[in-house]
Image 1 (cartoon, rainbow, N blue to C red):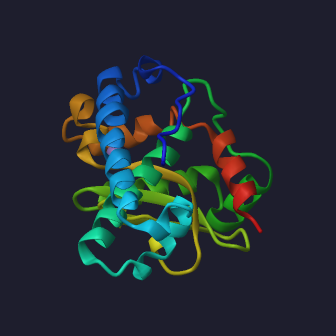
Image 2: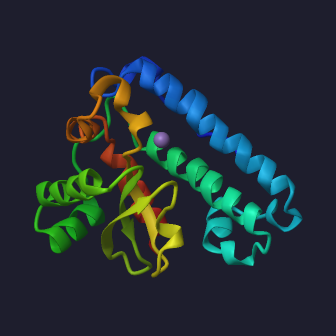
Amino acid sequence: MFKQIELEYNFNELEPYIDEQTMQTHYGKHHATYTSNLNAAVEKSPGLSEKTIEEILRNQDSITDQALRMAIRNNGGGFYNHNLYFGILSPDGNKEPAGALKKQIIETFDSVENLKNKLSAAAISRFGSGWAWLSTDNAGKLQISSTPNQDNPFMEEGLLTPILCIDVWEHAYYLKYKNLRADYIKAFWEVLDWSKVNKLYEDAKM
Ligand code: MN3
């Protein structure tokens, strides 16, 4: 049984950047539905129940039933992506990356500010619903990407592991920001906890 991440903050604590009503609906309805749909799909696929979500998403081709494969892709992605997203947010997190991650960011993007600008641009320019990502490969090299729908870097080439994500589905911001996706992305950085991203980077390195 896959379970939603337990939040370390209350729905209203990311105010004014992310509003309480959006959190309630986003975590309590959207994410909950992806999770229960994923569990229902896994129940129909005996081989999958022992696997981690990462293993499942990296090896979707082994699911021969097309409808089931699509259900796993959409709901498994929705489950995983939101666990990552809600897990890196915090009302009082670290405002800057540190250690090996910071060093790698500067090596790759020249500055933290430049990384944020590039990742924001990827999020703003994603047409329709999707996500923007910062991922690492096995060697610790960083990569920015964006994906449609609930796809994620596990489904891309190169054995990437995502360490930071921005949800740009309208349900992530429309109640407060309406059509102003760029304003939501600006606000996102205010509640991103870089210590969580640091930890994901350390854990992903092999
Ligand atoms: Mn969402």
